[in-house]
Amino acid sequence: MDHLNGGPISEDAFQWLEFNPKRCNRCGDCIDMCPMDVLYFGSHGFPYMRYRDDCWYYDICVFVCPRQAVTMTDLPYLIR
Image (cartoon, rainbow, N blue to C red; front, side, top):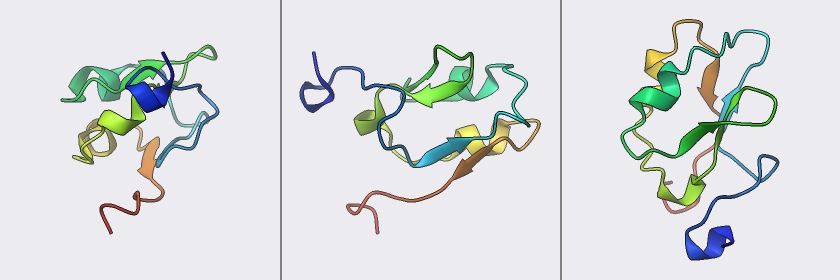
């Protein structure tokens, strides 16, 4: 299933969340606390938005990160 049909997207697809690998300790707090269950560990062990289109932009992932490794870089055009 491709992302246009609600399925997972690839790790290198556009995301509006950035995960800093130098700061991220892979604790998984951002993944565990995401109310929409869009974040997953990628093949390199760092989080990414696997179900990007289901994100409701709560920013919980940004606020719960103990190392400030998650930042919101851009919002989709529908939210601006």
